[in-house]
Image 1: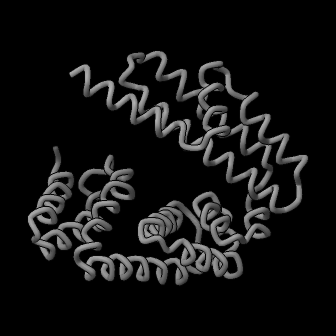
Image 2: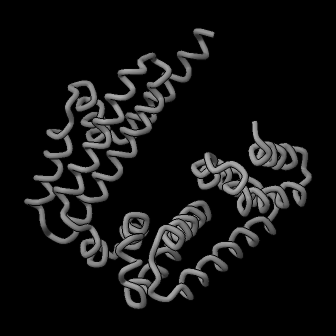
Image 3: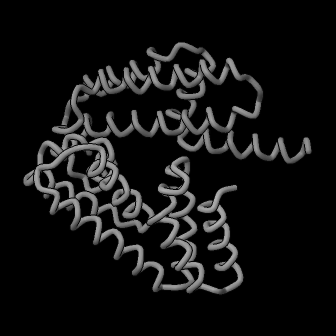
Length: 253
């Protein structure tokens, strides 16, 4: 394990032991410095680390205010970035979206994106994929539709990524890859549902049906298609499958 990962584990231990100030100090360090030390922790930084931060905030309100403070600082950086574009500002927006999601404050993402749409439309277009869930949550379907692009092309791209990932897993084989595949299936269905909901809320039922069919037709594997269709028909089926797989592994060992 590297230094950054150790700091995150230390934050978790401090929280469990009731040393909340120490835990917050480590969370702040991890969020600000982890990628410089261990670039491979990008996903952890915006998922598990923020989840643990929220756990801390439930017991130590100062932790929530600190996280909101980081969000507000980064929001100012975004808005002061002018009409600049590039990976730096896009990743900064991704950080803001993840923090707002962890805080349950998706409306703040919507409000920021509305300002970006007016003040910095080129950057808004680069960041739209990250913003779409918040736009839908805010029921701003007109703005969401404008940044959705070609829905059919979007779903084809999502399906191609899922096909490629599945093919790669088949090569490496093993049932240990099942949770990762199920996670991708879950994300795929969420993305497709997002597209379909925007279209339906904009009274484009025909295109919504076309996209729904394409989301299945574009998948190469029958088993993959069945898994996606099951999640479409019964939301939560993928989570249940992941839990069942985890329990089976525990039983085996």
